[in-house]
Length: 126
Image (cartoon, rainbow, N blue to C red):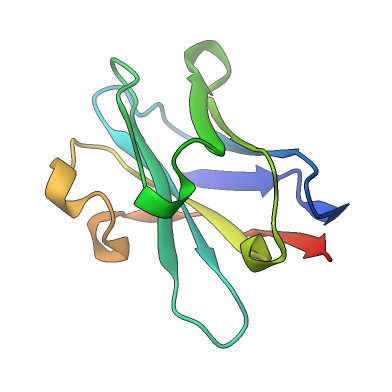
């Protein structure tokens, strides 16, 4: 299984950016995928998660309203649309997946996921 994250880059404050995560090697029907991010000197933190079947999403509270997570089942790809970006959103964004369902209370735990992508860097300049 491979998760390939892409779409990161350098943007200015207030801009939008969409990062993608393409899964190969298997489908995650019945499973869960998510995004985490890690800023320099900080711990990895949960951004958003999605149930592959059904498309139910959950977001970290501070990011609600600015970030939107979607998936394209036919492409085995999920997308994170990030709007009104701020310098504090600067981080390496990692996608993660588990082939089975993760209960909501555990969606934000990195240890709940079995597969990880390599990360894509998002830099927001002030």
